[in-house]
Length: 407
Image (cartoon, rainbow, N blue to C red; front, side, top):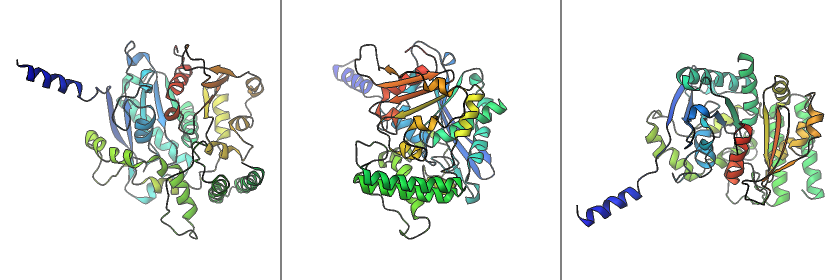
């Protein structure tokens, strides 16, 4: 063996692709002309077999944002968008199941425009089909604790899915303007004019942008620097809904991620139909769910708590979009929780916030945590809407706390 050969061999070894954890993926036909895509990663822990760790299903927001894309490569999966190992991947603590839902999201697709989901009931029903098929084919997960984690609008879907599983198993001037807009939204919701409420939501966001010189809804410390151009004229009926889609779904489908999902990942998966482009139907997903967008899910959370299902709420300190959601019932996630009818709510509210740190060596507070019985609340500092992307260490620690692992 010559020295040249050894050097080449070593260089080849050093630059080889990182070893990926065990994984599986597939499609489930949930209805006629509607198919849902899922992608499973088995837990990758050096000291524990995956059978000793829980299974987490991750749901992205939007509706129409892809968990198999954004959640996977931008937040909690084993590799980042550069296909480099992620130090804070959740696979250290659990197996993770990503699902592109509702149908039409990411690699999921419909072959008929009438097959898009238009309400939470259909979204939930479709997911039940996916989960039944998943656990039927992956019997090794049938006796493993199952958790649903979600982000943004995904939280609404997660609550409804969990309940179904249980059954079957600004400055003064600007603040005044925003408050006035929020009251109009609430009035529309009370009248059950939900499509109008979504339209008014879009107008409220316009007011916030005007009063804050283009604040980034996902992290209030930054401003929106990318130009989003709607394809409809400002006077058209669909224009406000397109603006909402561009802010909250297209925002996540960054060019680099789109190139990856429609390039190398598509080739790796091998089962994506030729006519399906990752994210190609996402706008239609959002538009079809427009009337459902502003319907609250507080009653669903109440039912989950009453059924003794563990519920965790987490929120980024710098997240504006969720605060706008709950401005309808006063600012903040805590105010939303105060609307619960849960009999133990007063005892939960009386609990003191406990400071959390990313490690025993750290002296900087990374989050605050409050817990009582089967309700937990995490307030993640220095994080915007995408908590795992902004504070990966704290997000991973939260997962270990929620799933009762040593941390």
